[in-house]
Image (cartoon, rainbow, N blue to C red; front, side, top):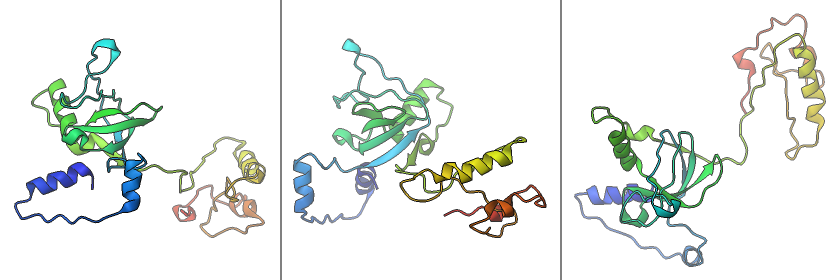
Length: 216
């Protein structure tokens, strides 16, 4: 739950809200030293385009006049790292930095609700805008956790697969696992010492069954 979501839930509650304060010296010291952000830490991918107005000295106008932080331009597909979803106590802006493609300075981007308002004003008042689809929550991965299939066509496909598995996979790798692996045709695990005799035999039907694809 983000700061903005927690604040909105508290404000909408009609019951008595009890707040419990817990001390944490390590987090307090990290916050004082600037090693701990304002409380949010999540990534979103934008599915819309937004170009903020340009003020003097080529600086972008802020999304909210009460927040003195320039707005960041947004292109569909941009990924942002959000560190404050309640920037300046306002539900209209997020403090974020673009991390892909490229890296930008810290700036403000519109929240779900504000982005929907901006898009409605740009297109048509009769068009409905789904706020949940404007940003897609994503996660940062150091490495892709699943094997990616490589499909090779043509008369030299068998030769290319053999080179990938037997030669390229022998290159020293950090995790010690093979970089390329030929899946079995029949669905039964092949022998480790004779993988091509199982998967590339002349009697194979040429179709890889879904059961042969193992996700680790």
